[in-house]
Image: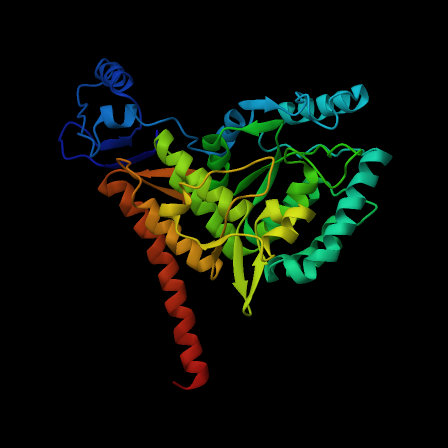
Amino acid sequence: MVHIESRKSRRRSSEVEIFVDCECGQTEFSELVQLLKSQSTGVMPNPCAVSSTELDDVPWFPRKISELDRCSHRVLMYGSELDADHPGFKDDVYRQRRKYFVDVAMGYKYGQPIPRVQYTAEETRTWGVVFRELCKLYPTHACREHLDNLPLLTQHCGYREDNVPQLQDVSAFLRERSGFTVRPVAGYLSPRDFLAGLAYRVFHCTQYVRHGSDPLYTPEPDTCHELLGHVPLLADPKFAQFSQEIGLASLGASDEDVQKLATCYFFTIEFGLCKQEGQLRAYGAGLLSSIGELKHALSDKACVKAFDPKTTCLQECLITTFQDAYFVSESFEEAKEKMRDFAKSITRPFSVHFNPYTQSIEVLKDTRSIENVVQDLRGDLNTVCDALNKMNRYLGI
């Protein structure tokens, strides 16, 4: 049920009418109508603006934030399942530790505090090496937004060489800064499930630390990558909006379109470059958490192209080697506008809107659902107009 309201009845035999807006398949709708008719003589089904067959063909996506539990637990490859070439493959102690982190993530549900982890001395040492070496490069390689937020994370979340930050503290900090939160995840998610989290301003984070035998290399995202690469940028409101819009564009999209969006995500939020004060700077988390590739991407050896979603979505994503090409944007705003235009090419029989009050996705498929969004916008515009009028009076304009 999406909406319910009562109003004065147009029938003499009834005092009120009850209007109910539902989202369901044709079979469920027919059963519901028959059930209501057995209880009442005044059931009047209204035709939907979008046919049921169109909606039935749309891939499932979470309609409310609590349904991310379903996405988060559909892990493609668990963090405890290591490939033979993984640095920790033959380390039984490390493998058992990874299993612990899997259990923590799989047991987590929306609304719970994120369990605090007692990191071992070895894990803290590994984190410290990564933190120290990357901080040497950030002043000359990281974008302004990353540099601005890292000291705040040190102050509020315990970002230090001798301390691995806790996700619960990071999540609370992000919520106040940009509305984003994080939640633990056991391993790799499908692009569709991962992007669905972004639509709700939820970022799935691993909690395990890479193997200590090679602190400067990891074949997979670990907590060093999440906390040093992603989190400082997610604290920036403009970057947060950019991330969320990629997620919203993925909801209900075809597998082909989701893959295109995931590739654009990969070459922006993971490996993106931007121009600031005439210099190339990194904002992609994959770069900001990799010493070797961060140096390479900003060197003369790297192939750098202008970001255009239509061509970027065709670029091959490389996991175990440096990328063949990197894509640069003039600003987050430019990248966001290009992604908005690209999202218009995605074929869906509806649009979606994130309701921040109910933390749910509203499917805009008819005039009533669109009217509800317009009402919210009207209220926001009234607030802006009132503020402008007060400023004009204060300035004597």
